[in-house]
Image (cartoon, rainbow, N blue to C red; front, side, top):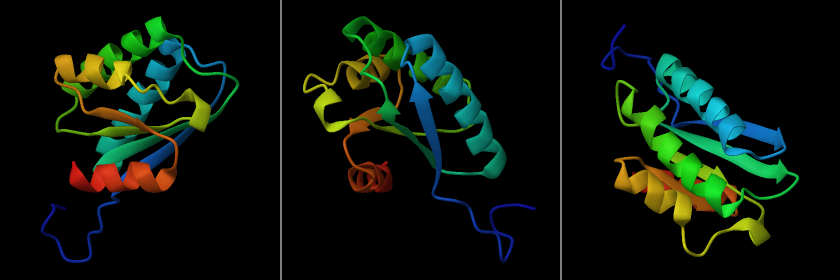
Length: 124
């Protein structure tokens, strides 16, 4: 089956929820699994919901996570943007993770609502 087959519906995005302690290593493991699942399901992008985590990532972990997401994305067979939903008080106005990912060719951004995340993914 290919993209031009009639009746084939490609999901717009894969939504993954992550709970527990947010550590860069654990979040990256979830992203790695999500990228693989997105490739298998032919989803165009990923929404990673971290809004249920106990706390936000540390500034150091934000840099690690952004760089790591870019590394995971670079191994994918196609571009798969990742929108992260964080609790409202956890949004980083400096966008450290986004900038770290972008420096390495990644496509990552953080938002406080699913609507914002979906709106960004429509532009990617």
